[in-house]
Amino acid sequence: MRIVPVPCMQDNYAYLVIDEATKNAAAVDPSEHAPVLAAAAEEGVQLRELWLTHHHFDHVGGIEGIAEAVPDLVIRGSAHDHREKRIPKQTTAHEDGDVFTFEGHEVRVIDNPGHTLGAISFFAEGNLCSGDTLFIGGCGRVFEGTMQMMKDSLGKLRDLPRDASVWCGHEYTVKNLEYAAGVEPENSEVAAALAAAKSKRAKGEMTVPGTIGAERSTNPFFRYDVPTIAAGPDDVARFTALREGKDRF
Ligand SMILES: [Zn+2]
Image (cartoon, rainbow, N blue to C red):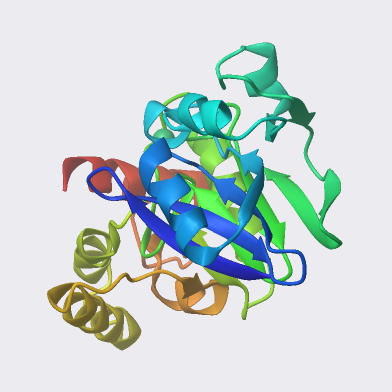
């Protein structure tokens, strides 16, 4: 299995998940159809499935155009978004913990309510497609869920293997790590990650993928149980202070 990021819109990432043996592919969060179809053509792969982490327009906007070009797509999203009918053409509704097989590769669905109530991540062979729940150095805004939900969702992702790759929905890494550096000015791993991200962006390179292990050392939203990271009597209070601080940053 190989993952190919496809930059879309201002700062979104769609991804091709490619099975090298069959040259069949799934596209994750196609914000736009044109760049995703172009990337599939360039890679010489046939799109079979679309995997949607949540219903926001900058993640599902390319579904209709891809479906026009490619018949019989399997279109996967959460059961919540299926009930709400807010992912166009969704064919398959997943519950937390569902495991499905794509071209022989096991893919696990992880419920991640918080950014939206229907948010999910896809975890396949050490690759996490986390949408707008986990970003490199940060996390998504809490629009539909509660702070407790978002903290718990990030807590689940934090427990994945340390060497798992993180493929997130946006290139927000520099801004996220600038905030993280303010939260933990004495954390040298944050400073190093920020310098590395700035250097990559200056060269026009992407900062994806990250790793779960690196996020555990640098991402404040994985570090809500570090007592000194924010004021508050418990994990939810500290997480809330961190997220509200980022909203104002
Ligand atoms: Zn979103």
